[in-house]
Length: 483
Length: 59
Image (cartoon, rainbow over all chains, first blue to last red; front, side, top):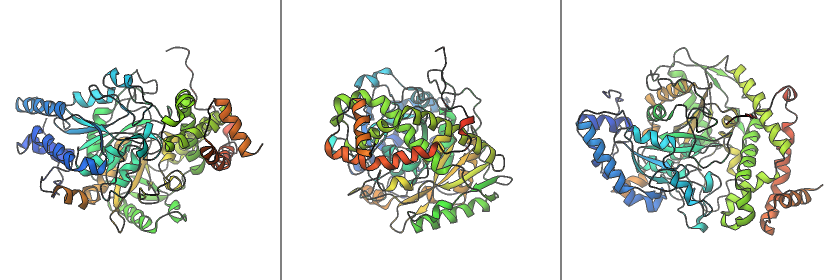
């Protein structure tokens, strides 16, 4: 295989280690002979030595096995065995996904350590088969929900652009790890936005693909009918490379769907001519919206038009109802999973987790069935809207990341998150960087598409990134720490 | 039934004992949670729809 897909702009860090910022750039360097996987892996591990204590990225580092895998990748590439773009690339895995040799804590005192002994989840096995170099298990919010809780002895994930601020959750370590160059890509999970929220607030790209597109067997559940395992990388192009490896049926996941996998990378034409993109920016007028973020969103949408898309103003159907359907529905499912442990070990859970999951006890059986009925109404309404447009764009959030001190996400910022809507519908949605606040905190633009049409979602995201540099913005804090 | 009683009954039915300060939190958020759920019953056309629940008689 020959890797030819490089952009005209340098995707190389301006920090002293000159680390490739993207998987695409690193893959090109590995094949050009200017970098080896062992050198690349040592470089990201050196970054971890300096940054992990400040950012709270890792729960488990896998230095020794990572360097072994990197050496193997170098030998294979030298011998002409090329497994694809991920071959020799350092990757991180959220610590709710089973990974052989690394255990799985779900960042909780409750988690049964035996879960980690099941071997690799299918997604992890697929990354290894593609030659990926797993460098560690990344922090999360406890059981992929809640807020940072330092009282239980786990690291607090911090924003790579200013550690006084939060990353967003729950795929927090994957988000700040990619942004800070502790690995070049990784796995997050998304039940109400847990890939897209940290992607937005850490300044990277994060994709929640169609429900059932990527098998979630081997992942600790939060909301069974809302959970997705998705790729998190700097660029949409890198997301396409990861999704190409992750996608595909596995019958160990009852919700996995056996449909053909598209050529996600081949779809990245850079041109949006002929695409109709529905635009719903009505939420930018809400009092909660940060005006600086609103300005970024309006400017970002114009870039899509510059790339050739036709913009069509639309109204997202049942926005409030489907947001409720996600937030209350997954809490009911989460409470079902945790009920036994909560009866016996309430205080072993972190307080934010108790406050969130405990609300699931207040949702009745009839409420839950009605939630699932509303979801079908929503799916029907969205299918009708999607006969008129190919994609829909809205912001990922209405606010920038909050400060960690005094944060109360579930009482304050949760109402300013625009991601849960798409989990109720199960449709593919990506968050891509669209700029930063006056103090340098990133924000995300969200693009969503038809069922199993991740290719068009990625095509639009990539076209946006060919015309902007937000996804290549590096943190001054990270660079100063590395200097 | 007021929020305090409802929350108390639902937690008791689940067999969960919640400390007083956390119980107050659930009582505080319950009315909004209930209102959001009640609104779902007002969505047009839901009566004609099957819920997205799938049961299969085989594994």
